[in-house]
Image (cartoon, rainbow, N blue to C red; front, side, top):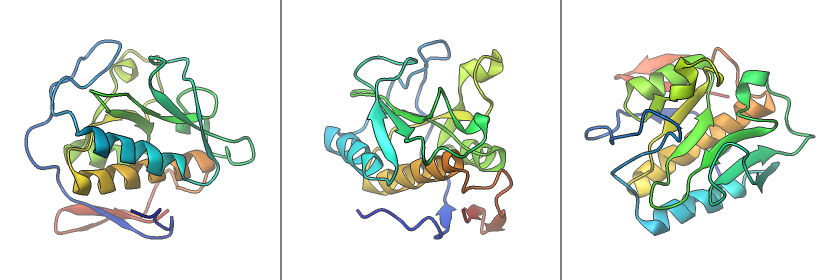
Length: 179
């Protein structure tokens, strides 16, 4: 799978099946519907290949998690595009392999509505930006493609290249946007 040009649009279908069970306290984690190890590793590899992205230890997660951060020259997004400092995305280790990331409000709301993610409990408590969601771990290669597109969208948001109000065009019940 090759990185997608940020100018391309993503049509997001509804996620198939029931949402996974999650822990609604800290640490916020996915409790079932875990991915195969090769799918989880492929997502990490793809995410780390995004230009301007580096891996760091998160202050907000287990040491085995991979925090995606932007190098200083790339971090031009609004404060709500970041989890902590220049961290915009956090990939949890196996077996969970869920992803915490930030998305602009309209995109975030639609991703949650379509069953791909849920609001982080820290948002309800007012301690984390409202842009933060937990994206469920991809269960197969098609979900891997969608998860990677959403990580790219989060990265563009953190780079300041994805509008807080993306063009919202619904076609056949899916959301398309361009960054």
